[in-house]
Image: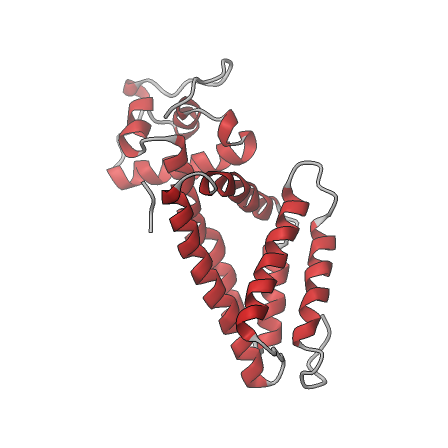
Amino acid sequence: MPIRDTNDSPEGHRRAPEASGRTRQPTEVRRRLIIEAAGDTIAQRGLFGTSMRDIAQASGVSLGTVTYHFKSLQNILASVLDHEMTAFYEPILEEARRSSSGREALLTLISAFLDDSPRTRRHWVLWLDFWALAAHYDTYSAWQHDVYLRWHDDVRAVLAHGMADGTLSAKDPEQDTVEFMAMLDGLVVQTFLPDSRLTPAEARDSLRKFAERFWLSAAQGTGGA
């Protein structure tokens, strides 16, 4: 569900191509280009270090094209994260769904969401900026609430899968899901902020140890973490 204010641009960045040098793209193509370029730019510079002009330059479109599609930087970041649900989250969830057991699916989520790749870091840096917005704006808070409901349902489904196949054991699946998500969020903050004290590998190890509560009483012989 996409969510629908500008800054001065720092000097020294390349200018967007002149109108005569730009290729006219369909509206949805231009919007997608802006979103993709904005994700990289905001992840690199931070929301409050980025201007609409920076995003126009990175997208190769005019400033007017950016402001035609988006009213503010906040709108752009929300749209970037809406795109992330398709580009980053859904492939991970699909991989978990293909897992042979619920336990393997849970480990897939842990490994993918706390991976040490630049792509994973980019994803969480964007979310860290968005969490600050959601704390102050009802529109963004409501959208994040909807995302968390989906995330809760997906984690709960993984636990249900494991309980059904005997590889996981959850005493209170609803509460266990909430605690798993809270643990993940806390580790994200401690891992992906600048100069964080945890590495992704350490964060994965911590979350795996936390998740051991789900398989301590599960059937033996399902393989190690």
